[in-house]
Image (tube, rainbow, N blue to C red):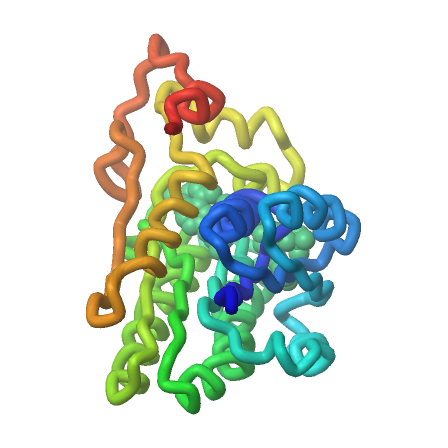
Length: 266
Ligand code: NDP
Ligand code: 8X3
């Protein structure tokens, strides 16, 4: 019987790469996101890898929609082995005193409350079965604030604390809890942050070879595959020329992009 991974925010970036990695690794998948067309486009490729795939289209900010989507699954899909709480976003890079309160609400509701909603829905059965793994996608941004990122950074600091709290609460069980904290990963993240300004988004990755979604998916899969007595509690994953959330050595002669890093993969 194959294991089941439920991945939130599977329509793009890190979540989509996790779907691919876990399908290749022999998992069946429950994929969630708000865009049904993107979810459906993923399905044939993952099925070709041998995965059975269920799609659940909902907004993680809507706890009732999340609950009824999860409840709509056939019985044999209710025992999730790995929950990857990945859905999330940053919006804006304004100073806090000039920021947009709507953006703050969206980040807080998605990155913190959405993660909690999914945790509340899925983890009780893990505890009951005495097995399971929750992998939260935090960020290096949760380690310290950077200019204009205070609210986003706070949501990722909350992810760290919530992950640590869950690890304490399930310590009497075999359920494992992991916080993966990526640095710069080239996905749709920055386009979303800058409200669709693709040129500004591209500049975020200039002069440095960023991580890819696949790099983070590999780490998530590694954590999930660790022997049962090994709990990868937290992993900080940075691009080689990134030292922390704010120190990045940008060299204009460094022209490699994520396309070249994909070529490196085994
Ligand atoms: P993308 O923008 O490529 O993907 C974001 C995903 O989140 C999409 O699949 C989107 O799906 C989903 N999502 C966003 N809002 C909601 C919502 N309200 N309900 C359901 N799904 C939602 O970005 P990344 O892959 O880079 O981001 C994934 C996670 O990684 C985020 O938590 C981000 O904070 C974190 N991260 C990213 C880093 C980076 O540099 N890229 C670094 C560190 C952490 P849809 O639009 O279909 O709903
Ligand atoms: C995303 C990484 O540094 O752009 O969490 O905030 S960063």
